[in-house]
Structures are given as C-alpha cells and as structure tokens.
Length: 365
Image 1: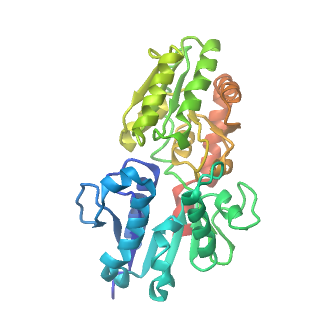
Image 2: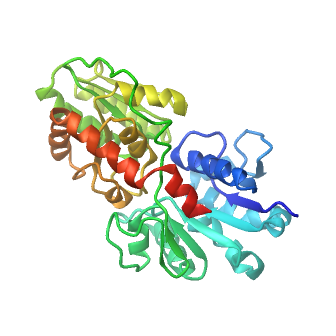
Image 3: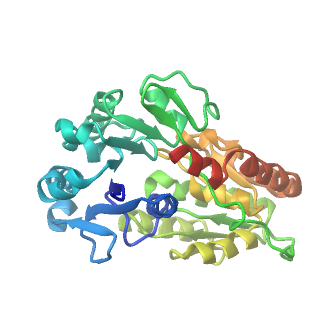
C-alpha cells in the first residue's frame, strides 16, 4: 500500500524561527503518526535537510523589489518541482499566494488546500502588491479548499462568522476554521511557582518587524513603567527588518529605557518555556496581519496571562484585549499585573477547553 504524501509549499520553514515554521513542523509530526510522508518546498535559505526541496532565490533583486521573491517562488515552484507535485496526494499551500500558479492546473488544484495564517495584505495601507494578494485570495476562495486559523480571514472572504465561533468546523463549503493550538502538557505552569519580585517582568515574544508592533510595546512600557518604576521588558525574537530594529533601538534610548528593555535573539521552544515562566505578563502588540498567535497560546498554557491587541485573528484568543494604542495597552498591562492570579487561571482553562493539540490533530485528520 502506497504511503500517502503531503507536500507543503511555504516561503519559510527551515531554519525554524517563527510560528509558521513551528506550525509546519507540528503538522509533519501529527501526520507522520497517522502514516503520512511529508515534504516541504521552500526557497533556498542555506539549509539542507531530508524533508525539504528548495527553489532558487535571487536575494539581490528581492532587496530592491520586496514582492519579487514571493512572486518568483510561486512561479518557479510548479516548473522546478512539478514531479513532486504530481506525486503528492495532498498539496498544502501556506497562504493563497503560494497557490496562485499551482491552482491553474486542474490536476493540482483538485488536491490543493490553502492554509491561511492570517491575511497576507495590509488592510490599513493597501498598495498595489497588497491589492493583488487580496484579490488572489478572494479569487481562489471557494475554488480551492481553504483552512484558516482565524475568523478574520474568513470574514474577509465573505463568511458570516463571529470571533471565537466555529472552531474546528467546516464553516462553509470547502472552508474550515482550525485555530492554532498548543500542547498543554509541554507548555504548562512550573512545578514550583517562580519566585516573583515586586517589579513586573513583561515579555514580548515577537519577530521584530513593524506588523508585530514592537514600537507600541516600547511606548506602552514607557507609560507603564511610571507606575511600576522597577519593571523590565524582554523582547524575544528574530530581527525580520534591520531598519525597523534600528528604529526600535533608537526609541528605547530616546525614552531612557536602555537599562530596562532587552532585545533577546530567538530561542528554542524548550528555552521559550523558561521565558514564559519568568514573566509576569506577556504582551502581543500586533498592529496588523496575524492569525491565532502561537506565542499568545503558549504563554496562556504556561499560566502567564496575555495582553493582546484587538486585531485580526487575535480576536479569537480569550486573553485581555486592548486597542493598539500605547496608553490603552499600559492600562491593560497594569490590570493584568494586579489581577495576575485570576487571569492566569482563566486563560489556562481557556487553553485546556478550546486550544489543545488534540482538537487541532483531530480537525486536521
């Protein structure tokens, strides 16, 4: 009997540094246990592994035209990796952009699933590239099976669905809502409660790019720290945008926070648990384009309450919501610190009820 083959197509997988990459790895583990073989097609990023097949990149052009790399990858994937696509039983495209050329071939379209990790376009400042992304997603919706990990994407596709409604269901024909989930046994509160000083320790587990709102986190911390003068903030994650990172560093200096705001490079999942355990509160300050944040769910599972903006897919996560505004964010952080115990229990329970990996595994299978 032939082993079924899933081919995932993604701009990012190896090296694993963000939520999308972790998602791919987790799905591979789940399907391996169910008897599937998985291969990932991705742009070449200097990494070789048995589970990936690469497509060439031209980074010099991408630095001048940011949209070029995405287009190039989508265009060359069916040309260079046609044999693997023909062998696949299911093709899983991470984001609709990856499916724009594959879907033109009926033999591939009928076995393709588009997976959305959140909308691909900037709704607050649509340029021509964003408009193409949005139109492409809408053109493919209903023609190609879709799995969305947040309700915001589905609403933008015309589905009538309220936040936190329709989990793990086919909400309309060929469209599923499967939110991100976590292993609540792996991500769990410490066996012995961490000794907490009176000074709050805020954690921002985010890639450093504008969409993730790192500047808002810094600005809100400047306000929060006036109430909690001994507090500190750790920003843990990779630099996705060097110029934006330089802006954030400058902002920290201008606000006289250099001895209290710390930038920490990416760490492993195992190491990340220690950051969650040591934090008083986790802040997810996204300003646009996000699904059901794995970082938020992991922190909640670890018993560290989460403050998050009321943006896109974050609306589906039952943390403490706030506007993407520094003052409102500072108020929410103060509330989370002063109500930490009850919020820790409430949010951990929400994970156990609705966001465990068993729900996710059953839905995908």
